[in-house]
Picture (tube, rainbow over the protein chains, first blue to last red):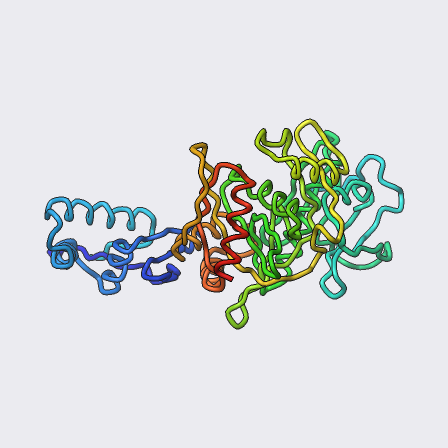
Length: 91
Length: 298
């Protein structure tokens, strides 16, 4: 069975401010702020990603970061995006 | 909600129009609050309408069976609010008029801010509740700079990279007692312009020389996000644009706009004027820092 892919919800509105991103969840109208790293993850999810694919990209982007820390942080960030209704899991 | 005439309202209570011609807000039964309204709002034109006019009011003033006065705004972001006296209801009514006025105009957003005119452009102070927006803007007024508002400001969407602030005509208030560190000039200013006072608030009436009039406009020179500290000192540092957008959103008072519309508009505002973080302990020092910053960067 294929691994599930993380996918941006297309109806979330997005405003880029100098590389950082403000998102608005359309149902609740809650505003979420993503710093440069969070914004990078959001941009990555422009194309649906499995957890392994996302970890591979981030490991290449932050070669000096401890792999375990980076992996844990990424899982937490993805989980937060899903819980806030900004990203869905497909498949 | 069924309509109940507030206690003391005259029998011919009817419809009133508030605001500039062509953008008037219709209010039913404003009579009960008119005597107190000047403590909170100045310079707004208003007139009595034909009692039989077939107009749906934007704001309705009524009373409930407990004797509370209800101020109810129709439309997006609206709803009823209850007040236990005509004085507090007049304050709520002023806020409701301002909210409805802002909502009527597509090119404007409103936020909680203190503001004063320095060398022809506005210093706009943002911050959490208690950060000193109101006191600092009054400190600037006491130093001779024209007050645009101590609590709220409307901003037009930028045109040609310039965003104008618009005075709402809300009357300033000073929290009492004044800070122990308040200097003699500030104390004299507050005492001299106090129209009425309660134990914890001085309601001020400034004149044309000290305060802008309703709908006066001026370009916004800079936003100052206030960070009051007990540690002493005073410093001003540039604020990243994303942080300014966050501050503008946190201080937003535009319930008629959904956030998907508000974020890009606040971003445009943050692009039209620079933001600074102002860390301070004493308002007099902060006022001087604002003036110096605008003179150096202006």
